[in-house]
Length: 356
Image (tube, rainbow, N blue to C red; front, side):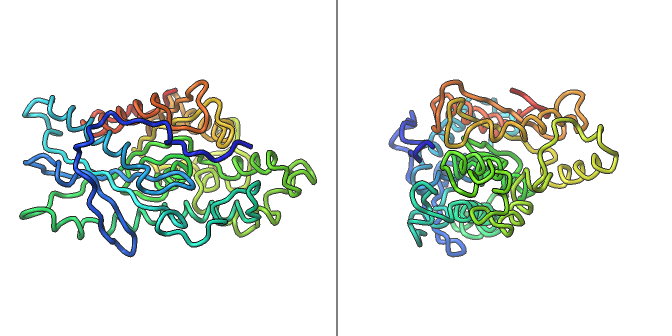
């Protein structure tokens, strides 16, 4: 199995070093860094907050360069808009914080290790960390406005939109945020996966866990390495688990099963992700979070929302696989991520449906 490198180690930012540093807050017991408060338009009438979620074994500071890059790119593009453009006065902030058991919140280093690194509870520990991150995002959305209000003279502009961008572990969390938090309308998932059961079953195979090799993975789900209580949590929070439980993702639309199944799935999608947009960036040569772990879910979702699909136009899905890229946030991914956020800020957004 591939080692856990820092996916951001080779990511460069063309943003100027003179960009104002982030301002720190203690919000609900979480140390938060917010970029862009001193760089908002003078006539700012609305705020969008972009939540940046870092990879496993990293910390909030690793996300500051991409946050700065996105903010400066939006500022440059915004300056080119005509004075009458509705987004001319739209403000963008970037917020990042340490995921649980990371950075200043570290409790037990072993809890961040993999099976191969000697952590027998790898599956439980990793899911618990980024599940906690998803709930932290909701908590921060509740409270961030009451803290940053002090930075505005007079009435603070309304926080009208929330976005999320996550890398690796943060990408897993971003999927959960999109499905769990109605106030987050769009996201960028970089080398993350919406199907925890599939990615961890494959990781158990590569790690040669006895719970997998015993019967080629037939009883891995529900074993000591992947306990029933973890399965229950996954069915509450994980996109694949929410829609299908522990059942396999079907290769055909629900219209071929029954009207009841179609109605059930449509109700879930309508209540959780209707009108949202997601950019999914995956490495074609990623061995740690291989695209094949996400492909069945993404294929099913794209077929549903695509032209002629049974949930046509329900949400926007832009699924990009970068040939030759490993478990890394490549420059091409950065470029597409920045463009995605800038287009959202301008109001163009993503065409609802699927796009590869």
